Structures are given as structure tokens and as C-alpha cells.
Image (cartoon, rainbow, N blue to C red):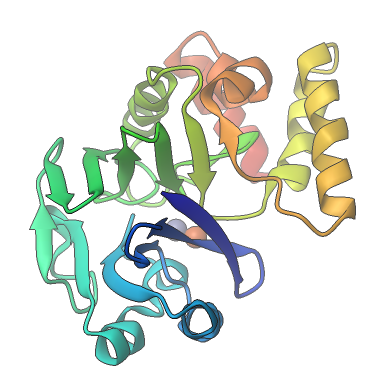
Length: 239
Ligand code: ZN
Ligand code: FE
């Protein structure tokens, strides 16, 4: 299984999970179809499934065109089936879904939106977190409560340390400024920022990160309680 990172729109990432045994693939959060079609055509990939973490336009914008072109099936959360465009397969919280070598479990992580989910490819130890957890940051709370977002972040914290995290946006450097401002003595954070800058200088994504790196460096994972988390979330909104 191979992961390809496809840059979309301004700062979105879409991801292709490619089964190299037969060149079939799932795409996670196709923001727009164009850059994906370009890659898929070049590599002659068979796009079987479209997976959406949530209904925002910058995560589902390519659904319709990709589905039409490749006859792919759209997979999303059952509670959001009224607003995931072209949805074919709706899954329940903690449901496992398998097709050939593709195997994942979904986790409901409300907060950014009420129907946000993560996709856990547990065999590969990979988690797609959409706009719930970013590297060195977390998503804005649009539909949920602080408590819901806090619980969602805590759930992500509970995954094995080596779990690779692929999130919806390249916000890492911008997020690092906030973490630095409120966690200035953190050596792990300083090292992380150094390596992020090196990658970005070479025009490479800062993604993936890992659960361990985020526990060590992401201030939103380092708060002790809901009160601390809520305060940080407010501060970040006005940072
Ligand atoms: Zn969003
Ligand atoms: Fe987004």
C-alpha cells in the first residue's frame, strides 16, 4: 500500500491510498478533481473509492467529477449522508469496511463539523484526520462544542504512538507560531519546527506527522483538561 500526497486548491491535501498489487486506489478528501485526474491518468490508476472526512467543499469538491469519470463509489458517515455529495456507502461510527486489500475503520470525531470522521487504515497504522487534527494544531470548532472537540482530540491521542497522521491542510508552519508562543521552552517543538522548515524549503509536504510527534509538540494535545483546551482554542482564533 502506497500513499501519494496530492496538493489541491490553496493549501489542501488529498491522498491516494494505492494498492500496488493491482494499481487500484482510494482517494481521501478530493478537494478538486483536476490535480487528481492528472495523477490518476499518468499512473493509470483504477480509482475505486472516494472517502470523505466531512462535507466541507474543500474536502468533497471533486466527488462528482471523479465518480462520473471513474465510476468510483463515495464513502462517508451515515449521519452526514444528506450533505456528502454523491454518497453511495454510508458507514456507522466504529464500523470496519473491507474491499480486497483496503481495510479501515471509521471513528466519529465531532467538533469541526457534527459529522466529521477519521479513517483508520489499521493494518498500515495510518490515520486520516481531515480538519480535526492538524500537525501542531487542531480544527476550528464550527458545529460542535468545545467538549466534543476535546474528546475527539483525546481519541486521536489514544492511537498507537507510531500511527502516521495525514491531515487535510498544510497549516504546520503557521500552527508552529502559535505553539511556539505558548510553549516556548519545548525542545521537541523546536526540533520539529526545524525539520518542517527543511521540508517546506524543498517544496515537500510537512505531512505525515505521527501521534508521538503531536503528543510531544502540539500544544492542543498537551493541555491537561477541557478548560485549558477551550482557552487555547479561543486564543488561536484571535492569534
Ligand atoms: Zn473543514
Ligand atoms: Fe478544510
